[in-house]
Image 1 (tube, rainbow over the protein chains, first blue to last red):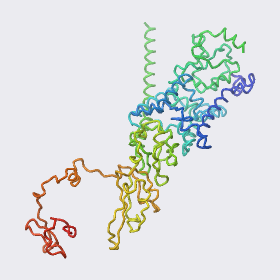
Image 2 (image 1 turned 30 degrees about the vertical axis):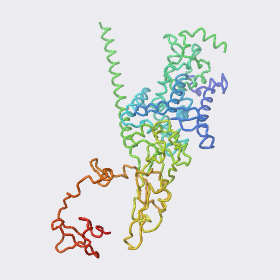
Image 3 (image 1 turned 180 degrees about the horizontal axis):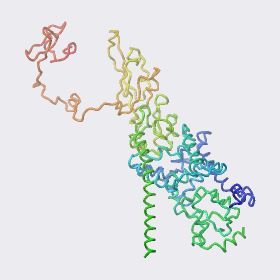
Image 4 (image 1 turned 90 degrees about the vertical axis):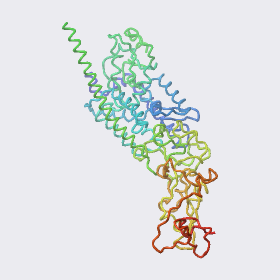
Length: 301
Length: 293
């Protein structure tokens, strides 16, 4: 760890695997985020109407409806049911995230992720250490509150202030003062609480993590025996608490698959690990003992 | 034994910690929820000049049903609708239009409703003429050009429901004494609130405006019956008019109202300029109206 202290996180991985392999998932993720945004913007900016709407509900090429289940559920709690297309879109999105992991939305789709990742990166570069106490469960309490509040007020409650939809809707339909909310989140993550928004407060992410509670697609550490404790994965992970059980669980009889629903499947740990400990895999492939096969696997690679 | 007490005290501490943590969350998040809830209540006050798309549910329901996707905005061919920005007075992300900027063109196929993935815009509304986005009100009688005696008529002529939603009612111009005024008169049952009248009003500030029906309309008490409507419904008067009792009228000493019927004496004053027209006089009508042939 002391050796890594002076080095940038992931520097070792760049040395060992080359720049591309040390940034692959990050780059793919950014491509995904910006492409989705581009699809939404092609209409209003260039008149190419591939996707209409925004993340709350969109209609692609006149046949694919997609509904945000969190907004739809808040609306349902107020006593209003979506129309058929809205319900079909809801089912499609639910099934998709059920399979690939709910928080894939956070790391591969959500535009705010780019903002909070930037804040996290800058926080690390500036060496800002202090972080105010804010439990990672707070978001689940806020999630519950938004449902109770929606039912009590009859208003889709979180949409009154939801920075995720404010930013996405703003980029497509006109930003207005929404930039100030986004800036506030950036500064909050930068100076107040490390990974504060996405990792502690955002009920959208909390909701998606519940959807992906049993998703088959997971990050796994099959080669955990090769871990040299450089801590780069913990440094770079937006939800570092999810790594430990899988990475260090061998002695406790815990398999190498990261099972926590809070894992966003961003794959950044795969990038920064110089020992290729991590990989995307299935949750079922979770043998407790990884010592032998892990050694063999890393040889094969 | 000692071990056991240690264990129970440990689990007791854990339980206490759990209760404290939960209380902390309930209180903190509860405060946020309270703030949001009050904000939600306030957000239901839609500004008077912000109009919802056709078929929109009442504001109370609309804010629960609308998921702020903007599909109605996209499918409006006239760019009438916009989504409220965070600093707009209208609830963030919800669709609205301002009649004075771009009014609703009342498309016959109502594409905005078709695009709506929720029930926020009532899919049961298929006839745009039955839409109720608001009600036009000729709000300023002091600046309306027709009230000034001019023949502007623009609001009347642009109305998509012309001669039903807005009519021109002719009344004598008492200022000149010899002209007529053609007063644009809104009939709320036919007005859809599209806003074309407000948009086209030639004044600097429109004298005719679309208001939410709640602001624009009075409401009779439930027990009120309008006599002439009941009469036409029944085909005859609901009371026996022959037994109508007219109370004596108090008039200043020596005052004479032409054509006035005084039930106390059973005497009817003669009509001005029409001597002996007693027969046709109607009891208690104001002077100049009663009994004219």
